[in-house]
Amino acid sequence: MTFASSLLYARKIFFSKTNRGSERSSGQRSLMGAVVCIAVSLIPLVAVLSVSSGMISGITGRMIHLSSQDIRVTVPADSEYTMSQEKFLSLEKMFSGIDGVLKIYPEVQGMALAAGNTYRSGASLRAVEKNIFSDNPYFSSFFEVVEGKADLSGNRNAVIGKKLAGLLKVHAGDSIKIITIKSGDGKIKPRVTVFTVSGIVSCGYEELDALWVFIPLENAFTTLKGCTLDFHIGLETDSTFTSRLDKILVDSRIAVLSDMESMDSDVDDWKTVNAAQFENFASTRALLIVIMLAIILAASINISSAIVMVVMDRKKEIAILKSTGASSSGLALAFVITGLFTGLCGIAIGIPVGLLISININPIINGMENIVNFGLNLFHAGHVKFLDPAFYLQEIPVVIPWSELLLIVGCTVILSIVMSILPSIKAGKSSITEVLSKN
Image 1 (cartoon, rainbow, N blue to C red):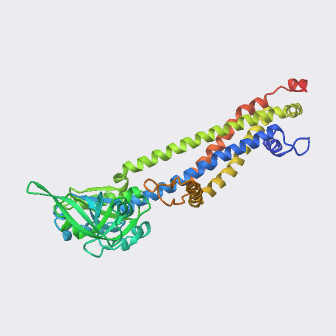
Image 2 (cartoon, rainbow, N blue to C red):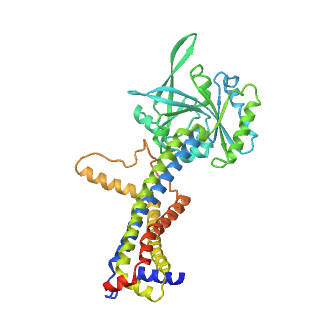
Image 3 (cartoon, one colour):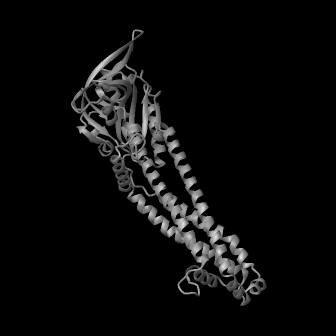
């Protein structure tokens, strides 16, 4: 029995009707059931992979380009370069000649207490250059201006996060007090600085921007001088996600070590600065994949039971084929191919449907949310938010993980073949005499 013969017989098993007309046999119905099970298991797997990839990609992009930058240089607070704004900005020359560095963003960070008219909250101060919201393309694209304008042109202007604005109950044009601690002469003194909220912004990920307060860089060297501050130089490169970033990192460290005043500075890439968060993302995603693959494995078991049902339906047919010279291996191969057909059909249904859901995940979630909230409103039961902005992106970027999808397809094909082998071998070894005597 040749491979072509096995393929033709597998086609007959999978597609042909019984002799009783258009009715399918119980074995064929079992095969169709296995196809449905595999498709149903693949749909959520593809959707979860795409959504998690988009979510992680969106959060990662915001953490890098709005916070750590590709490379972060942390300058000691007692360095000569932190004594004045001019000296601090002169550090830009040190990195401007490095191949691959596109832009340089000096920044001073510190913790403070922000006070509105009726409420106080901890705040993360970020003293940046006045034109960062217009000159930094990532600030322009990731930040949504909720109120006012993202304008730091005034020395006492502040741009704050949406969550903090809600806590302080302030709006664009209102004043907030920034309370910091100044150490000197062995004493700790509070310092109060009043800023005007020029704008309220949101990057779509509340956990990141909830407590941010952007102020002009010069304040770090005037009104906040003597407070506990961290001095950073952020380097934006052309190689954020490529191995070339390692070379740029080495060149940056060499530049730092070549200057006596800055040689104690720490130079780290975004993977080191955000290591804890990215390890958490990776482990969560890996766990999701393992769970979904376990579901596919359970669905693939249906292929084995379906092949058993097909063999029972076609025992007489198998015996006749063997009596005419069909080999046991050829018959076994035909049933293995049948199992493979089953898996491929499940893939052909599950993958496209999963991708369709992934591409339209935002309107799907919004629609479900509206339906649920409509029902809750009928009973005055409150409001539900499926994607809490405190933990998730408000808008999920659509990212199709093609490499992972190919891995899923490969695993499904392999499982389909493996689950078909044992019942197929038993079918090939069935006795002609025993089958014909019973019929």
